[in-house]
Image 1: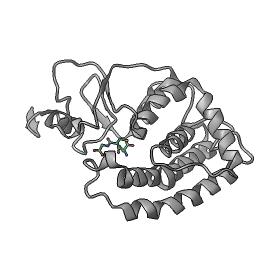
Image 2: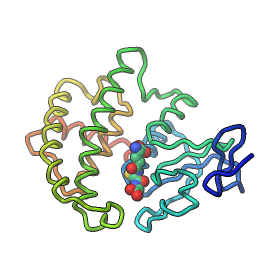
Image 3: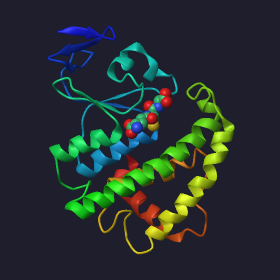
Length: 227
Ligand SMILES: N[C@@H](CCC(=O)N[C@@H](CS)C(=O)NCC(=O)O)C(=O)O
């Protein structure tokens, strides 16, 4: 057994739970921030509940030594398993629970569906969620301590890219109920969280994108959307 970052215990070469005092699985959550919300919606769809601890991002609690020991990247969500294994990255956490409890399938079934869900989830992460996040982080006054330096020109540069992608997404949704096809999936969760994050970023879905609006109303009506 050794020490890493002063607090994380290492046993048999693995990262261990730095807090040590309880061995229960725990999710480090982050209020209204979009990535922790992805994980919460996913868990709600699966009907899974587990102990959570809120990390106050506004108070920069993610940068404390205690949380940095959990995730050196200082981001939420983070999942600590009973054996002390730490999993970060919202989609990695979702994949863990998909394996633990496969139903309902949210990463798809069969080669084609799994690939289409992966494709759309990646597209939504890279072309929408990341773009909206750049706008929010580089333009909102509340983010000036978290995003250093804020680059307002980068916020502006992302706006037309987001609108171009929304038009592509709208066309995709013309002939399918959900983003990746017939079934609700993790791609819908990423899409919902990204579209909802447009509001604090002061962005709106253009009026003409009626397929996108129909989809957004439907996924927002699911109980999991309240998570
Ligand atoms: N790719 C990561 C992104 C995690 C992330 O950026 N989390 C944000 C909240 S949505 C965060 O913790 N931000 C804290 C900071 O920027 O200091 C994931 O999917 O979990």
